[in-house]
Image 1 (spheres, one colour):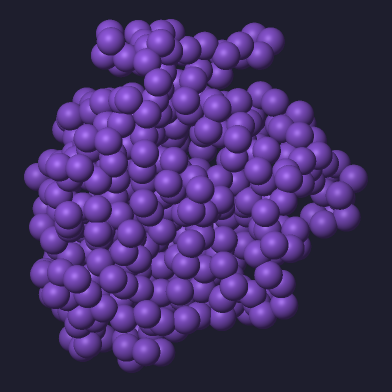
Image 2: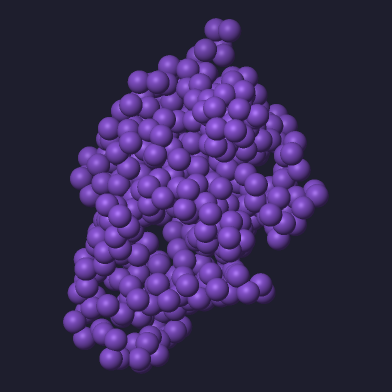
Length: 444
């Protein structure tokens, strides 16, 4: 293990321990005029620096064995464990990235592709278990369920030329996912199933890559029956995420620091970090309330919709990996106030784009039928930004603000009441579109 990686891990652990062990503390890091964090962490009064960490945690005691097992199973193993037909498929993109598609197979049924968000993976759709995972629910409703994994995450770390230890491997952002990963995955599914079109459901970054695919490869819009966007992201003018706002405010400095220490992967998924997260987030640990606040720090707060018992499973699968360039691109969107390609600086921009500024994505090309689902407490996809996005999309057929003020970015996929608050509505919309699609095919 390299010295720089060890240094990064030590830094992460030190920061997290500082958060966990500060009782009733206001955490505020101020850079210039920007406050990065300003959060009141409500830990138990008797949890303090005078108590050794080892005395405050118990690992694997009195925890449901199923939860412990699920925190270590991969997506395929989770699906198989609960008696569903699981499949692994490999997709190679035209620029050499080797991706994994997971499937809950229902041959002959209409395929639906689920695309995860930032630092996430296909596991997000099933890790809460049957009856609580959208992947299982769609299968029970009669769909052939496919779950993507974009380049750089736990399941898609291969390349025909580079290893993931190469800096060149990590030279991508969500632009390449939209131009290469999603089109390649769609083509694979259509060839495998024989269907001419699919349903698409994306969460967060899973919506970003769809807009990019529509912008840069508009021919793929004809392959989409219906796109449903959960917590849709494009414009970040009203973003409240302290992480994204920090990257926006200090974009030049962050870039320099990341290059200086040689870090190309942001929050790598490895045994050390997983072990630390499970230590902090284990159900029997008194710090689980603090841990949930740390998780919510980038997305918004809604403790009532998070099943804290499942935190060991969550941290067993996330973060699942992303490139630092990817994170920088989100910061750039926040800073610029536009939805555009990566900014390399005026000189390299001119060389790549023949313009000193990056080109905006062409949202008018996203001609597939789109439904937008968003929430008031979502720090990344704020209602004003989603409504601005809707004005640029030419075929929005449904737009719904979740009727629960505390609903946040992660509740769209992990929320305890997500089915009642949102998913049943999504399924009704899908069925309505399917019926309309069937009638159109009969008259064609």
